[in-house]
Image (cartoon, rainbow, N blue to C red; front, side, top):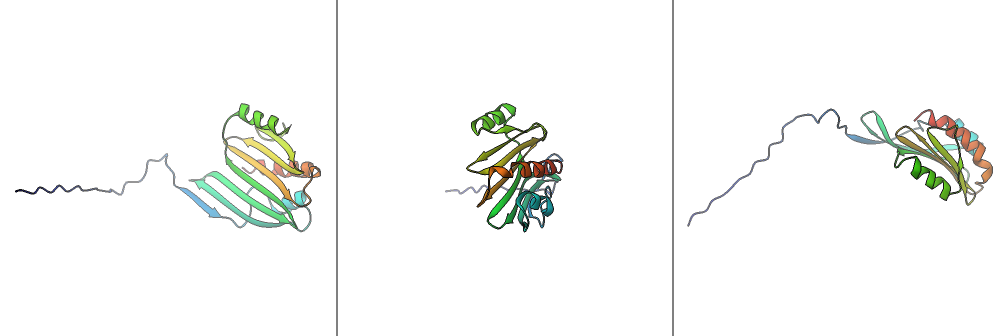
Length: 157
């Protein structure tokens, strides 16, 4: 009887990845890169504090962002992520939520108030920006203040 053994070798060579492939990274931030504490306080009120922020990037390109601010029992959440869909999908979302077009913001934008909580959705280039006010005391009266915050944040995407 004969026994034949077959060995396979895997060779990993230290070649860099192609230039169009970038490693994704996530990091915890000490401040929100698209909205300052003072701007958040203008939206939520006196006593607003920065709570947290996390950002994911691929190379130098922002893929996603989450920032949170707190004032008493109210919160302001700011998110940015890669845009999904196109204008027809965003328009369908706006209509389903009874949102109001916000033509002065980004490439496409709308605001809505659901259960007393204000939400802004803004598309600028490849990113979608969302701002939400929630918690106890959130009302439709937050719309103008959140609109001003959205105007400032969208310029920093």
